[in-house]
Image (cartoon, rainbow, N blue to C red; front, top):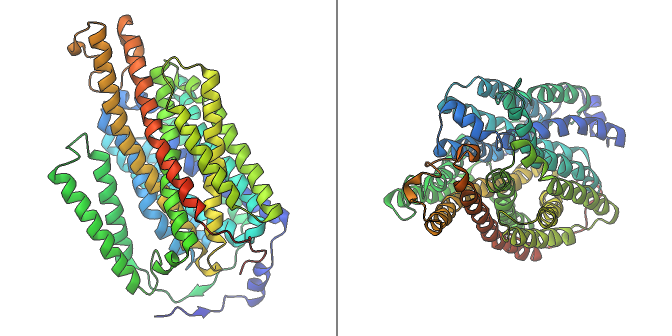
Length: 517
Protein backbone atom coordinates (compact mmCIF):
# COMPACT_ATOMS: atom_id res chain seq x y z
CA UNK A 1 0.00 0.00 0.00
CA UNK A 2 1.26 3.46 -0.83
CA UNK A 3 0.74 5.86 2.04
CA UNK A 4 -1.34 8.91 1.16
CA UNK A 5 -1.06 12.32 2.73
CA UNK A 6 -4.04 13.89 4.41
CA UNK A 7 -4.43 17.57 5.25
CA UNK A 8 -3.52 18.82 8.69
CA UNK A 9 -6.05 20.44 10.95
CA UNK A 10 -5.08 23.92 9.89
CA UNK A 11 -3.70 24.56 6.45
CA UNK A 12 -2.45 27.99 7.50
CA UNK A 13 -0.69 26.59 10.52
CA UNK A 14 0.95 23.90 8.45
CA UNK A 15 2.12 26.41 5.95
CA UNK A 16 3.54 28.55 8.70
CA UNK A 17 5.55 25.68 10.14
CA UNK A 18 6.93 24.94 6.69
CA UNK A 19 8.56 28.37 6.64
CA UNK A 20 12.32 28.25 7.35
CA UNK A 21 13.11 28.77 11.03
CA UNK A 22 15.19 31.78 11.96
CA UNK A 23 18.56 31.30 13.65
CA UNK A 24 17.03 32.35 16.98
CA UNK A 25 14.17 29.86 16.63
CA UNK A 26 16.61 27.09 15.72
CA UNK A 27 18.82 27.86 18.72
CA UNK A 28 15.83 27.90 21.07
CA UNK A 29 14.66 24.50 19.84
CA UNK A 30 18.24 23.26 19.77
CA UNK A 31 18.57 23.91 23.50
CA UNK A 32 15.86 21.34 24.16
CA UNK A 33 17.36 18.85 21.72
CA UNK A 34 20.81 19.22 23.28
CA UNK A 35 19.43 18.75 26.79
CA UNK A 36 17.75 15.54 25.66
CA UNK A 37 20.86 14.32 23.85
CA UNK A 38 22.99 15.05 26.91
CA UNK A 39 20.94 12.87 29.25
CA UNK A 40 20.56 10.10 26.66
CA UNK A 41 24.30 9.75 26.11
CA UNK A 42 24.96 10.29 29.81
CA UNK A 43 22.88 7.21 30.62
CA UNK A 44 25.44 5.03 28.83
CA UNK A 45 28.56 6.59 30.34
CA UNK A 46 27.79 7.87 33.84
CA UNK A 47 27.97 4.39 35.38
CA UNK A 48 31.38 3.40 33.97
CA UNK A 49 33.46 4.79 36.85
CA UNK A 50 30.75 4.03 39.42
CA UNK A 51 30.21 0.37 38.50
CA UNK A 52 32.80 -1.13 40.87
CA UNK A 53 31.06 0.63 43.79
CA UNK A 54 27.57 -0.24 42.51
CA UNK A 55 28.34 -3.93 42.05
CA UNK A 56 30.02 -4.17 45.43
CA UNK A 57 26.83 -2.80 47.04
CA UNK A 58 24.54 -5.09 44.99
CA UNK A 59 26.86 -8.13 45.30
CA UNK A 60 27.42 -8.44 41.55
CA UNK A 61 30.33 -10.02 39.71
CA UNK A 62 32.24 -9.50 36.46
CA UNK A 63 29.36 -10.79 34.31
CA UNK A 64 27.02 -8.22 35.87
CA UNK A 65 29.63 -5.52 35.11
CA UNK A 66 29.40 -6.36 31.42
CA UNK A 67 25.63 -6.64 31.34
CA UNK A 68 24.90 -3.34 33.11
CA UNK A 69 26.66 -1.61 30.20
CA UNK A 70 25.61 -3.96 27.41
CA UNK A 71 21.90 -4.08 28.32
CA UNK A 72 21.56 -0.37 27.55
CA UNK A 73 23.57 -0.57 24.34
CA UNK A 74 21.60 -3.63 23.22
CA UNK A 75 18.15 -2.03 23.48
CA UNK A 76 19.47 1.34 22.29
CA UNK A 77 20.81 -0.31 19.13
CA UNK A 78 17.75 -2.44 18.46
CA UNK A 79 15.26 0.40 19.01
CA UNK A 80 17.07 3.11 17.00
CA UNK A 81 15.78 2.15 13.51
CA UNK A 82 12.25 1.75 14.88
CA UNK A 83 12.27 5.27 16.34
CA UNK A 84 13.74 6.56 13.10
CA UNK A 85 11.04 5.01 10.96
CA UNK A 86 8.27 6.20 13.28
CA UNK A 87 9.60 9.74 12.92
CA UNK A 88 8.85 9.60 9.20
CA UNK A 89 5.25 8.64 9.98
CA UNK A 90 4.26 10.64 13.08
CA UNK A 91 5.04 13.78 15.08
CA UNK A 92 8.77 13.96 15.74
CA UNK A 93 8.26 16.19 18.77
CA UNK A 94 5.73 13.85 20.37
CA UNK A 95 7.97 10.83 19.78
CA UNK A 96 10.94 12.64 21.30
CA UNK A 97 8.91 13.57 24.38
CA UNK A 98 7.71 9.96 24.74
CA UNK A 99 11.33 8.76 24.58
CA UNK A 100 12.27 11.23 27.30
CA UNK A 101 9.40 10.02 29.51
CA UNK A 102 10.64 6.43 29.07
CA UNK A 103 14.11 7.60 30.03
CA UNK A 104 12.81 9.35 33.19
CA UNK A 105 10.76 6.37 34.36
CA UNK A 106 13.55 3.84 33.74
CA UNK A 107 16.17 6.05 35.43
CA UNK A 108 14.03 6.40 38.55
CA UNK A 109 13.47 2.65 38.68
CA UNK A 110 17.19 1.96 38.16
CA UNK A 111 17.99 4.16 41.16
CA UNK A 112 15.70 2.02 43.33
CA UNK A 113 17.26 -1.30 42.22
CA UNK A 114 17.93 -3.77 45.03
CA UNK A 115 19.88 -6.35 43.04
CA UNK A 116 21.77 -6.66 39.76
CA UNK A 117 18.86 -8.35 37.97
CA UNK A 118 16.60 -5.36 38.60
CA UNK A 119 19.35 -2.94 37.61
CA UNK A 120 20.04 -4.72 34.31
CA UNK A 121 16.31 -4.80 33.46
CA UNK A 122 15.97 -1.07 34.17
CA UNK A 123 19.07 -0.35 32.12
CA UNK A 124 17.52 -2.22 29.19
CA UNK A 125 14.40 -0.04 29.43
CA UNK A 126 16.62 3.01 29.73
CA UNK A 127 18.28 2.06 26.45
CA UNK A 128 14.94 2.18 24.64
CA UNK A 129 14.35 5.76 25.76
CA UNK A 130 17.95 6.78 25.11
CA UNK A 131 17.81 5.25 21.63
CA UNK A 132 14.76 7.34 20.80
CA UNK A 133 16.30 10.56 22.07
CA UNK A 134 19.65 9.99 20.32
CA UNK A 135 18.07 9.23 16.95
CA UNK A 136 15.24 11.76 17.08
CA UNK A 137 17.40 14.71 18.17
CA UNK A 138 19.43 14.51 14.97
CA UNK A 139 16.32 13.85 12.89
CA UNK A 140 14.62 16.97 14.31
CA UNK A 141 17.69 19.05 13.48
CA UNK A 142 17.62 17.71 9.92
CA UNK A 143 13.95 18.71 9.66
CA UNK A 144 14.65 22.23 10.94
CA UNK A 145 17.54 23.32 8.73
CA UNK A 146 18.88 22.44 5.24
CA UNK A 147 22.11 20.42 4.90
CA UNK A 148 24.29 23.44 4.08
CA UNK A 149 23.31 25.16 7.36
CA UNK A 150 23.31 21.95 9.35
CA UNK A 151 27.06 21.80 9.82
CA UNK A 152 27.34 24.63 12.36
CA UNK A 153 24.44 23.25 14.38
CA UNK A 154 25.67 19.65 14.25
CA UNK A 155 28.91 20.93 15.76
CA UNK A 156 26.95 21.66 18.94
CA UNK A 157 25.72 18.07 18.87
CA UNK A 158 29.31 16.86 18.70
CA UNK A 159 30.31 19.07 21.62
CA UNK A 160 27.43 17.85 23.79
CA UNK A 161 28.13 14.27 22.74
CA UNK A 162 31.74 14.77 23.86
CA UNK A 163 30.69 16.28 27.17
CA UNK A 164 28.30 13.43 27.94
CA UNK A 165 30.45 10.61 26.53
CA UNK A 166 33.72 11.51 28.19
CA UNK A 167 32.33 13.68 30.98
CA UNK A 168 29.86 10.99 32.10
CA UNK A 169 32.54 8.96 33.87
CA UNK A 170 33.70 12.13 35.64
CA UNK A 171 30.17 12.93 36.82
CA UNK A 172 29.69 9.35 37.98
CA UNK A 173 33.00 9.41 39.78
CA UNK A 174 32.16 12.62 41.64
CA UNK A 175 28.78 11.19 42.66
CA UNK A 176 30.16 7.96 44.13
CA UNK A 177 33.00 9.83 45.82
CA UNK A 178 30.50 12.20 47.52
CA UNK A 179 29.33 10.48 50.70
CA UNK A 180 25.97 12.26 50.99
CA UNK A 181 24.95 11.35 47.42
CA UNK A 182 25.75 7.69 46.71
CA UNK A 183 25.73 5.69 43.48
CA UNK A 184 21.93 5.81 43.07
CA UNK A 185 22.25 9.46 42.06
CA UNK A 186 24.08 8.29 38.93
CA UNK A 187 20.59 7.44 37.67
CA UNK A 188 18.69 10.31 39.26
CA UNK A 189 21.04 13.04 38.03
CA UNK A 190 19.67 13.08 34.48
CA UNK A 191 16.00 13.30 35.41
CA UNK A 192 15.82 17.10 35.97
CA UNK A 193 17.55 17.68 32.61
CA UNK A 194 15.10 15.35 30.87
CA UNK A 195 12.12 17.14 32.42
CA UNK A 196 13.56 20.49 31.34
CA UNK A 197 14.08 19.15 27.82
CA UNK A 198 10.41 18.11 27.57
CA UNK A 199 9.22 21.57 28.62
CA UNK A 200 11.64 23.43 26.34
CA UNK A 201 10.72 21.27 23.35
CA UNK A 202 7.02 21.80 23.97
CA UNK A 203 7.51 25.57 23.75
CA UNK A 204 10.11 25.87 21.01
CA UNK A 205 10.05 22.88 18.62
CA UNK A 206 7.56 23.52 15.84
CA UNK A 207 7.80 21.07 12.96
CA UNK A 208 5.27 20.30 10.22
CA UNK A 209 3.39 17.05 10.77
CA UNK A 210 2.37 15.16 7.64
CA UNK A 211 -0.32 12.69 8.62
CA UNK A 212 -0.46 9.58 6.47
CA UNK A 213 -2.20 6.27 6.35
CA UNK A 214 0.51 3.90 7.44
CA UNK A 215 1.24 0.28 8.10
CA UNK A 216 3.56 -0.33 11.01
CA UNK A 217 6.12 -2.98 10.07
CA UNK A 218 5.77 -5.06 13.23
CA UNK A 219 7.30 -8.19 11.69
CA UNK A 220 10.29 -6.24 10.42
CA UNK A 221 10.83 -4.63 13.82
CA UNK A 222 10.66 -8.04 15.52
CA UNK A 223 13.06 -9.76 13.12
CA UNK A 224 15.61 -6.91 13.10
CA UNK A 225 15.55 -6.70 16.90
CA UNK A 226 15.94 -10.47 17.18
CA UNK A 227 18.89 -10.58 14.77
CA UNK A 228 20.77 -7.75 16.46
CA UNK A 229 20.01 -8.98 19.98
CA UNK A 230 21.13 -12.54 19.27
CA UNK A 231 24.45 -11.45 17.76
CA UNK A 232 25.12 -8.96 20.56
CA UNK A 233 24.28 -11.48 23.29
CA UNK A 234 26.65 -13.94 21.60
CA UNK A 235 29.58 -11.55 21.47
CA UNK A 236 28.91 -10.45 25.06
CA UNK A 237 29.02 -13.98 26.47
CA UNK A 238 31.55 -15.63 24.14
CA UNK A 239 34.93 -16.23 25.71
CA UNK A 240 33.50 -16.02 29.23
CA UNK A 241 30.44 -18.29 29.49
CA UNK A 242 31.54 -20.55 26.64
CA UNK A 243 34.37 -20.83 24.11
CA UNK A 244 34.42 -18.70 20.95
CA UNK A 245 34.43 -21.94 18.96
CA UNK A 246 31.53 -23.87 20.48
CA UNK A 247 28.04 -25.10 19.70
CA UNK A 248 26.61 -22.02 21.44
CA UNK A 249 28.55 -19.79 19.06
CA UNK A 250 27.37 -21.79 16.07
CA UNK A 251 23.75 -21.59 17.23
CA UNK A 252 23.76 -17.88 18.04
CA UNK A 253 25.75 -16.71 15.02
CA UNK A 254 23.82 -18.99 12.71
CA UNK A 255 20.52 -17.85 14.20
CA UNK A 256 21.51 -14.19 14.00
CA UNK A 257 22.56 -14.47 10.36
CA UNK A 258 19.39 -16.39 9.53
CA UNK A 259 17.23 -13.72 11.16
CA UNK A 260 19.27 -11.07 9.34
CA UNK A 261 18.58 -12.73 6.00
CA UNK A 262 14.90 -13.03 6.92
CA UNK A 263 14.88 -9.32 7.82
CA UNK A 264 16.08 -8.46 4.30
CA UNK A 265 13.23 -10.50 2.79
CA UNK A 266 10.65 -8.96 5.15
CA UNK A 267 11.85 -5.40 4.61
CA UNK A 268 11.82 -5.79 0.81
CA UNK A 269 8.14 -6.75 0.95
CA UNK A 270 6.95 -4.34 3.66
CA UNK A 271 4.87 -1.31 2.67
CA UNK A 272 6.62 0.83 5.32
CA UNK A 273 9.90 -0.98 6.15
CA UNK A 274 11.73 -0.10 9.35
CA UNK A 275 15.03 0.04 7.42
CA UNK A 276 14.16 0.68 3.76
CA UNK A 277 16.49 -1.58 1.71
CA UNK A 278 16.58 0.89 -1.17
CA UNK A 279 18.52 3.32 1.03
CA UNK A 280 21.57 1.12 0.53
CA UNK A 281 21.44 1.73 -3.20
CA UNK A 282 23.08 5.04 -2.28
CA UNK A 283 26.80 4.36 -2.04
CA UNK A 284 27.17 7.11 0.57
CA UNK A 285 24.60 5.46 2.86
CA UNK A 286 26.22 2.02 2.57
CA UNK A 287 29.77 3.24 3.12
CA UNK A 288 28.72 5.57 5.96
CA UNK A 289 26.96 2.69 7.71
CA UNK A 290 30.07 0.52 7.41
CA UNK A 291 32.31 3.34 8.65
CA UNK A 292 29.91 3.95 11.55
CA UNK A 293 30.32 0.35 12.74
CA UNK A 294 34.11 0.72 12.69
CA UNK A 295 34.07 4.14 14.38
CA UNK A 296 31.61 2.89 17.02
CA UNK A 297 34.04 0.18 18.10
CA UNK A 298 36.62 2.82 18.94
CA UNK A 299 34.29 5.46 20.31
CA UNK A 300 32.71 3.32 23.01
CA UNK A 301 35.93 1.42 23.64
CA UNK A 302 37.84 4.64 24.34
CA UNK A 303 35.50 5.75 27.11
CA UNK A 304 35.05 2.31 28.66
CA UNK A 305 38.68 1.26 28.81
CA UNK A 306 40.28 4.63 29.54
CA UNK A 307 38.30 4.89 32.77
CA UNK A 308 39.47 1.40 33.76
CA UNK A 309 43.03 2.30 32.82
CA UNK A 310 43.21 5.34 35.07
CA UNK A 311 41.55 3.58 38.00
CA UNK A 312 43.20 0.16 37.79
CA UNK A 313 46.54 0.86 36.12
CA UNK A 314 47.28 4.22 37.76
CA UNK A 315 45.34 3.79 41.03
CA UNK A 316 43.27 6.97 40.67
CA UNK A 317 39.90 7.69 42.25
CA UNK A 318 36.81 7.77 40.00
CA UNK A 319 36.76 11.57 40.11
CA UNK A 320 40.43 11.96 39.19
CA UNK A 321 40.09 9.29 36.48
CA UNK A 322 37.34 11.37 34.89
CA UNK A 323 39.41 14.56 35.08
CA UNK A 324 42.35 12.84 33.40
CA UNK A 325 40.27 12.21 30.27
CA UNK A 326 39.75 15.96 29.72
CA UNK A 327 42.19 16.13 26.75
CA UNK A 328 39.90 13.80 24.83
CA UNK A 329 36.79 15.81 25.79
CA UNK A 330 38.36 19.07 24.66
CA UNK A 331 39.71 17.57 21.44
CA UNK A 332 36.34 16.14 20.48
CA UNK A 333 34.36 19.25 21.38
CA UNK A 334 36.67 21.74 19.65
CA UNK A 335 37.09 19.64 16.51
CA UNK A 336 33.35 19.05 16.18
CA UNK A 337 32.46 22.73 16.61
CA UNK A 338 35.17 24.12 14.32
CA UNK A 339 34.57 21.53 11.60
CA UNK A 340 30.83 22.22 11.70
CA UNK A 341 31.32 25.91 11.07
CA UNK A 342 33.81 25.32 8.25
CA UNK A 343 31.47 22.84 6.60
CA UNK A 344 28.64 25.37 6.71
CA UNK A 345 30.91 28.04 5.23
CA UNK A 346 32.32 26.02 2.34
CA UNK A 347 29.79 23.19 1.87
CA UNK A 348 32.46 20.49 1.81
CA UNK A 349 32.65 17.66 4.31
CA UNK A 350 34.61 14.66 3.00
CA UNK A 351 38.05 16.02 3.95
CA UNK A 352 36.97 16.10 7.60
CA UNK A 353 35.86 12.47 7.49
CA UNK A 354 39.14 11.40 5.92
CA UNK A 355 41.23 13.38 8.41
CA UNK A 356 39.10 12.29 11.34
CA UNK A 357 39.30 8.54 10.69
CA UNK A 358 43.05 8.79 10.05
CA UNK A 359 43.62 10.69 13.31
CA UNK A 360 41.45 8.14 15.12
CA UNK A 361 43.64 5.30 13.85
CA UNK A 362 46.80 7.19 14.84
CA UNK A 363 45.37 8.04 18.27
CA UNK A 364 44.46 4.43 19.00
CA UNK A 365 47.85 3.19 17.83
CA UNK A 366 49.57 5.67 20.16
CA UNK A 367 47.29 4.72 23.08
CA UNK A 368 48.27 1.14 22.32
CA UNK A 369 51.74 1.98 23.62
CA UNK A 370 50.33 3.04 27.01
CA UNK A 371 51.55 1.27 30.12
CA UNK A 372 51.01 1.88 33.82
CA UNK A 373 54.04 4.19 33.98
CA UNK A 374 53.52 6.13 30.72
CA UNK A 375 53.95 9.88 31.40
CA UNK A 376 50.61 11.66 31.56
CA UNK A 377 51.85 14.38 29.19
CA UNK A 378 52.23 11.81 26.42
CA UNK A 379 48.87 10.26 27.23
CA UNK A 380 47.26 13.71 27.00
CA UNK A 381 48.59 14.14 23.46
CA UNK A 382 47.38 10.66 22.47
CA UNK A 383 43.92 11.30 23.95
CA UNK A 384 43.66 14.71 22.25
CA UNK A 385 44.47 13.17 18.85
CA UNK A 386 41.84 10.49 19.43
CA UNK A 387 39.26 13.09 20.52
CA UNK A 388 39.91 15.27 17.47
CA UNK A 389 39.47 12.22 15.25
CA UNK A 390 36.13 11.40 16.83
CA UNK A 391 34.99 15.03 16.62
CA UNK A 392 35.70 15.19 12.90
CA UNK A 393 33.97 11.89 12.20
CA UNK A 394 30.82 11.18 14.22
CA UNK A 395 28.41 13.94 13.22
CA UNK A 396 29.76 14.24 9.69
CA UNK A 397 28.85 10.64 8.85
CA UNK A 398 25.25 11.50 9.72
CA UNK A 399 25.47 14.74 7.73
CA UNK A 400 26.74 12.93 4.63
CA UNK A 401 23.79 10.53 4.73
CA UNK A 402 21.22 13.25 5.38
CA UNK A 403 22.52 15.15 2.36
CA UNK A 404 21.99 12.08 0.17
CA UNK A 405 18.39 11.06 0.87
CA UNK A 406 15.08 12.91 0.29
CA UNK A 407 13.45 14.71 3.20
CA UNK A 408 10.70 12.10 3.55
CA UNK A 409 13.32 9.50 4.54
CA UNK A 410 15.52 11.61 6.81
CA UNK A 411 14.40 9.72 9.90
CA UNK A 412 15.11 6.23 8.59
CA UNK A 413 18.40 7.25 6.97
CA UNK A 414 19.70 9.15 10.02
CA UNK A 415 18.83 6.30 12.36
CA UNK A 416 20.68 3.84 10.12
CA UNK A 417 23.98 5.61 10.87
CA UNK A 418 23.25 5.77 14.60
CA UNK A 419 22.09 2.13 14.56
CA UNK A 420 25.30 0.81 13.02
CA UNK A 421 27.53 3.05 15.16
CA UNK A 422 25.91 1.85 18.37
CA UNK A 423 25.91 -1.77 17.22
CA UNK A 424 29.62 -1.53 16.48
CA UNK A 425 30.19 0.07 19.86
CA UNK A 426 28.27 -2.58 21.78
CA UNK A 427 29.98 -5.44 20.01
CA UNK A 428 33.34 -3.71 20.29
CA UNK A 429 33.03 -3.17 24.03
CA UNK A 430 32.11 -6.82 24.53
CA UNK A 431 34.82 -8.28 22.30
CA UNK A 432 37.53 -5.89 23.43
CA UNK A 433 36.47 -6.41 27.05
CA UNK A 434 36.92 -10.15 26.64
CA UNK A 435 40.32 -9.52 25.09
CA UNK A 436 41.32 -7.25 27.96
CA UNK A 437 40.32 -9.81 30.58
CA UNK A 438 42.39 -12.42 28.78
CA UNK A 439 45.46 -10.19 28.43
CA UNK A 440 45.26 -8.88 32.00
CA UNK A 441 45.11 -12.45 33.30
CA UNK A 442 48.07 -13.41 31.11
CA UNK A 443 50.26 -10.48 32.15
CA UNK A 444 49.32 -10.83 35.81
CA UNK A 445 50.32 -14.51 35.76
CA UNK A 446 53.65 -13.51 34.22
CA UNK A 447 54.20 -10.82 36.85
CA UNK A 448 53.33 -13.16 39.71
CA UNK A 449 55.69 -15.81 38.37
CA UNK A 450 58.52 -13.29 37.95
CA UNK A 451 57.99 -12.07 41.52
CA UNK A 452 57.80 -15.69 42.77
CA UNK A 453 54.29 -15.13 44.14
CA UNK A 454 51.98 -18.17 43.95
CA UNK A 455 49.29 -17.75 41.29
CA UNK A 456 46.72 -18.90 43.83
CA UNK A 457 47.35 -15.70 45.72
CA UNK A 458 44.06 -14.40 44.36
CA UNK A 459 45.22 -11.01 43.22
CA UNK A 460 42.06 -10.54 41.24
CA UNK A 461 39.75 -12.93 42.97
CA UNK A 462 37.86 -13.45 39.72
CA UNK A 463 36.53 -9.93 39.67
CA UNK A 464 37.50 -6.26 39.61
CA UNK A 465 40.30 -5.63 42.12
CA UNK A 466 40.19 -3.01 44.84
CA UNK A 467 43.80 -1.82 44.83
CA UNK A 468 43.49 -0.35 48.31
CA UNK A 469 42.65 -3.76 49.79
CA UNK A 470 45.44 -5.69 48.09
CA UNK A 471 48.72 -6.43 49.87
CA UNK A 472 51.23 -3.68 49.00
CA UNK A 473 53.65 -6.02 47.12
CA UNK A 474 50.83 -7.10 44.78
CA UNK A 475 49.66 -3.62 43.77
CA UNK A 476 52.43 -2.83 41.21
CA UNK A 477 52.01 -6.30 39.69
CA UNK A 478 48.27 -5.73 39.20
CA UNK A 479 48.59 -2.16 37.90
CA UNK A 480 51.27 -3.22 35.43
CA UNK A 481 49.01 -6.02 34.14
CA UNK A 482 46.07 -3.67 33.66
CA UNK A 483 48.23 -1.00 32.00
CA UNK A 484 49.62 -3.51 29.50
CA UNK A 485 46.21 -5.14 28.94
CA UNK A 486 44.43 -1.86 28.15
CA UNK A 487 47.28 -0.90 25.81
CA UNK A 488 46.75 -4.09 23.84
CA UNK A 489 43.03 -3.30 23.55
CA UNK A 490 43.71 0.08 21.93
CA UNK A 491 46.31 -1.46 19.66
CA UNK A 492 43.73 -3.97 18.43
CA UNK A 493 41.15 -1.16 17.97
CA UNK A 494 43.51 0.83 15.70
CA UNK A 495 43.07 -1.36 12.58
CA UNK A 496 39.29 -0.90 12.78
CA UNK A 497 39.76 2.87 12.65
CA UNK A 498 42.17 2.40 9.74
CA UNK A 499 39.49 0.39 7.92
CA UNK A 500 37.08 3.27 8.54
CA UNK A 501 39.65 5.59 6.94
CA UNK A 502 39.84 3.37 3.85
CA UNK A 503 36.03 3.17 3.73
CA UNK A 504 35.44 6.94 3.73
CA UNK A 505 37.99 7.38 0.94
CA UNK A 506 35.41 5.77 -1.37
CA UNK A 507 32.51 7.99 -0.26
CA UNK A 508 31.46 10.29 -3.09
CA UNK A 509 31.28 13.91 -1.93
CA UNK A 510 28.40 16.08 -3.04
CA UNK A 511 28.16 19.75 -2.10
CA UNK A 512 25.67 20.26 0.73
CA UNK A 513 22.20 21.31 -0.38
CA UNK A 514 20.99 24.76 0.58
CA UNK A 515 17.32 23.67 0.64
CA UNK A 516 15.50 20.87 2.42
CA UNK A 517 14.46 19.02 -0.75
